Length: 615
Image (tube, rainbow, N blue to C red; front, side):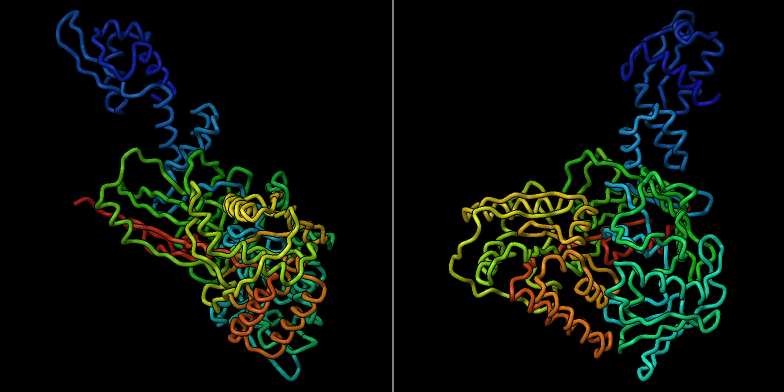
């Protein structure tokens, strides 16, 4: 008998009452279920074996047996739907609960984690917002950039120390005399649609990128890009750049088909509308995972069998958009994994990367022993970047005014204000852009006249709102009225690009990627919010310093050189570092190979599980 019929019979029984003992004869039960007593007995035994009810028959005519329904009908449907979700039958689960999206979201959270089906590992996660299209050439938030690393490869990769290692290119050569870089490709590379990746396509891609407004500053010194042969691409520069290989290791230089670039070569900060994310606009990448499906409700990644490196251990990753109804800290995220009837938790503090909710609901509290086990299985790190406020040059504040404003909004004062919040942020005060850089302490200044009202611009995000509110409190304590203007991420970038962000302060996150030296360099060189906030003179000074570094320094020296520039900008009070988020990944038990990456996510390529045989 299929589930529909079983649920129908159970719903008829539920009219007798649920979760209470019922004394009843078999004949009476048969009448309620509209069936014969013989068939009724069979049905009761089946439903009892499924755990839906308890049935204790009494021998003898007219003897009253014991009936106890374990679930209400809605609870039963939710339980069955949750079982369907756990094995990937999402449409069936939705139909069973009458397409109740709120309940569906709760069930997704309950089943989030990793599960093995037919020997393959599948990860299901939930996230608090839907993702923008995964295209490297558009401005993306932190989590999308993490996903770009899963879907695309670059010619080479760069680590936090500026060390270059192979990716699609296995070898590279810089001719300093000719100012020329050559990259040698691996043979038989393919995009996710099966088409070849060769030097011709890469040359066409970079020549097109040079024409996009968001690339022109970084690629201004690239004279032309040509294919020497199918496996060798040549970059001819018009000025020295010994660290150019690090430039093309950034996520925005991920290798993609040229057809994915916009046909009109203008600034496009936002992604394709979700309505366009369908089969006709399939994303084609070059990395370990391909985008199998991307809708407003979910993103599904599938391991790419022809990936040049090791195939991902995880077969599929499905991330559902679910708005959490829980009032949890924005820094807390959890994964609950159910693998081979054993459970494991992975949790990741997620302050910068726009809250992921990998969480499963559990009515039971952890024991002290469980808590200790979880605490012992954790990895924690301070993020590379920080949250900072830019003082907009449009505010026309003098150096002394900027210094006094920086004093009012100092990191220690902000953190003290944030600790009083109902949802405290896991962070440490920031005294420079990177936590490892020189700690800059202001000597303080006497009170300076400031405008009676200051405005703050942020984009829509819980943590930014919390910090903006703390800034407002600090300013109001000094007798300054404060107004916070909230934009979408795309609106903020568009305003910055057109120099129309008129607020006095712009609160942003400096989100850095795994290629740390060039990630900081790119931000200083071409970030639209930074460029909007600086005066013409300050912007010219910054550009001159950065070009000098690019022409004279190896990549391994970038961070030391950039530290002095950052220190100068903070000393001039063009920007105010505020806090570095603390990212923590908790795990225990079943899932293996779990580590935290620079985006605060688990490295999904390397997640695996071990099947435990019953002893």
